[in-house]
Length: 278
Length: 320
Image (tube, rainbow over all chains, first blue to last red; front, side):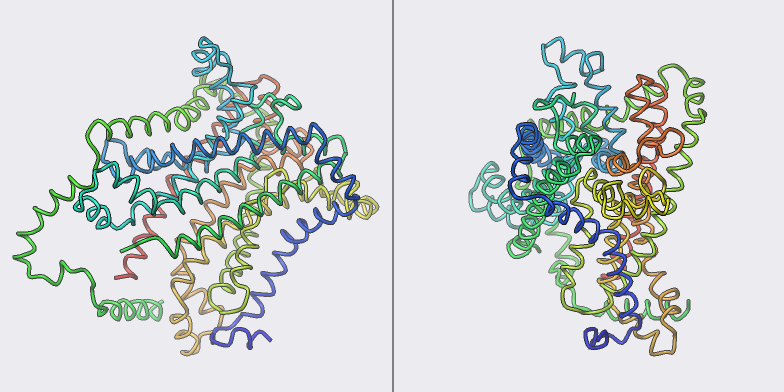
């Protein structure tokens, strides 16, 4: 069986390594995730629907998805600005700032959470001046939104950066020599060829923000129906031993993230067929 | 060793004969020198924006990164040292802090070593052989990346919790998985599952199977081939995967929070202790632990940058 499948290779170990891979993958990832879906089948559809459409669940899902969408939009715009500055311009500290973009990836989420809360709290370095302007950030939905912007920014930058670097300079030279001004060249020629990467980065940032827990819960305030995100509601339901409720919310979120992965895969396939490279 | 280096040098020689497509190389040097300054100058004019716009974009990018990335990092250290160095070290030498550090190191050691072994095995199966459903298998390995940390913890509660599938059996046999080290380790392994495999698969696919096939045909065993031929080729990629896996294992919060039960001095990892101390308004202690994790993140980033440079160099050598 294994030799028939791996007929083109003369290397040893296909059966053994594939067997071990599938076993370990099943034990750690597939069986636990299957258990989640199995648990939802213990509920009738009406029960499931009742949980998912209850006011508190719906508000949590709306807050998570809505604010994640808004944060991903900001990431899309600011990510493009950052990529443009890092790739196209030379300025002092460019390499340092390039490395700094990865910090939201690398910083443990709980650390990011307490740091952002401290920064935007009413007596914090940024919270105090904002409070004087009448803007309360910490313990409000604005805080959730800012934390989501923080964790999403590397996704857009790191997806778009290699594409902008590889973009064939001849295209924009051609556009310019055919009489297009810079504005047209950027918005009609360069940005369109970045669209698949931009959308991929947007989707990744969005997906990460929807599922994010650690960097959000400290700054969120966690008031039911106001500033309670869906992952936190799962944790609350678990601590109340309402496993069915926790599972139903989790399944909705998991399905949403599977749809996002599927979209990202399609986007990347699309990108491979249309990006002009040299 | 010599077998491997011979093979490597012969492949680079072969690749050196590949025709170059760059037109500049084909034109005579004298002509090239005359043309180049002119095109460089006109390129610069065509491919950039007016000065005020350039300034505005750079300023906007730097302002954003400073507010959202630099300041939170500075806040961690400023708060940790806000009552002086002695308060900082006093907080770190609390028994609670020490046990959290110990547990974090233990969990990282378990999950990194298991995922290292799995990652290498999976990358070998996926990159060195052709089979149907390869892309699907890679998608499955990637799955934990797209699952919310809270859900990653939840799935293990559903399996091993009191109301879970194995709950009553585990209770009857007095085996503790949830709210104990095994549960924390399982959740961490789940969350860090893809790192090593993901770092190795593209690298090993690019390297192909020729060197390994040559080693096998010269009489090397499978393990000899792996340790003498494959491993030297993938060592930087492997280190890269282990580095990122370790950073995430030590820093994981959501998944671990769900399965740990927060038993003080027993099932608190460093990120969990940061949360507990912060909620108790022990800010110096909380940020002292957080500063250790932030340093871990910074060191990880520096080493990652160095490794990425090594990996790029490796690619340039093999591409030319």
